[in-house]
Length: 162
Length: 431
Image 1 (tube, rainbow over the protein chains, first blue to last red):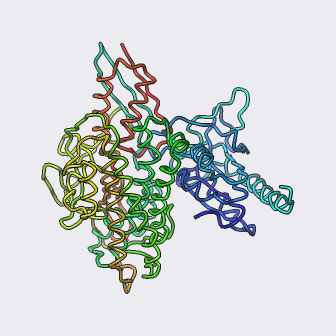
Image 2: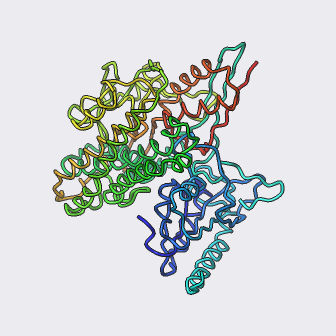
Image 3: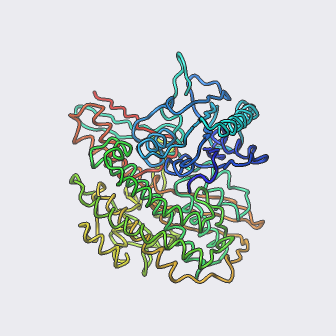
């Protein structure tokens, strides 16, 4: 399934792994007042699904949880394609994610025209269904940022030069 | 990500699986003394989380354990609870379950074959580099995976944590017309699967024969997928209710995972085990493809598991088309399941191997205990033994090369690294 709309918001994560559920939590809030012309997908991060979700999109916004050292839980990192880290080959099909999807999309010409990745620093990705307070507190700002990106894209799409 | 200065992003930070994966090898006087793999987190949280929940909930909750094989968790849970409640699901509803499971096998195996396993044999570090030189091959793999996803989307409602599965069957059964449309997409995929098997059968495989016992579900008349009775490659079998007396999990010091023993010995589940126990029940097309690929009735070389997976993709597509051909929409899309106090056992063949669930239900219809025995927990001891042999035979290599070799060997089994082992951290303690 290629993107049916020009803009797709892709939330990656497992709501049963505490802060890993920040993407799905954002998707739920965004869907409560869904901007028109925007697809919202919740995925587990498997790269071929990511390719399917963003192929053909003008803008893809991906939201994921991230572990950092030292950590500042709840901090939001907004990044573009070329800043993404690359890892070593995965030992299992359970171990692939966004960097593999971007690399594969590049080789196969299956990247969205613009890709924005939001990585929210997690405090705890152990088992559990609730976000930690620090990450939950970051949700409003994250939602505002995603909505602003969508609005900005609508502005750009009106511009024939872009 | 936009880390600056002293900040450092963990390499696994954006990987989907959380935690760390590690392999620790102790070498004393040139002998491998101990190999300890820490890659797997057991589903203990889910077992605890399930206690006190309604008996209808485990299929959905346990599907969250794994995004790559949710159908396996859903259907093992359904089988176990239906067993406890004295309900059996047959006819077209059972056929739809099998069809859905075929989708998961196709999708999961295609991902593993093309994105993980094949690059090892072709001298590429990963599928991205492979795609640079052989774009059409990787595209074929992605198309094959998409055929599996199409089944999951239609029958399961969606591919990630399918929402259409419920106790007793499905919320909604597809129409004949919908399945006819699906069949149109599966036919070319079957050709791609046959081509895949031919392709992987030409790889060079290191000589290695495993002597572990092999355990899989068995059905007399079909390749066991969504149901069956446990059977070993040496011909022993027993009722599923006896599973806990034959397969015993033990705590081991180096891992949070329990290690399972089959009647006291290491054993393997998964594609090699399924093929050894059930190759005679493959469809004629799949049997022919397997024979053309050089597989006998049994295959004990873990590197050749890529060929067995490819044959299973052929079978799953062939079987999906057969099921669609014989499909008549059931009058009811599910069988009523009423809660009944008792214990139930359920097992299915997840892409990685046998997945066993056991639930006890109390008089109020709530889950009073849950046991989930995933394939990786069962395989872990055998994988460690195989790695010990491999490391012993290659101790002359430097740590970097040895790590690569271990990673390749681990990929043979495609373990569920449900803790984010994006890469393997190898420690060789040589003294």
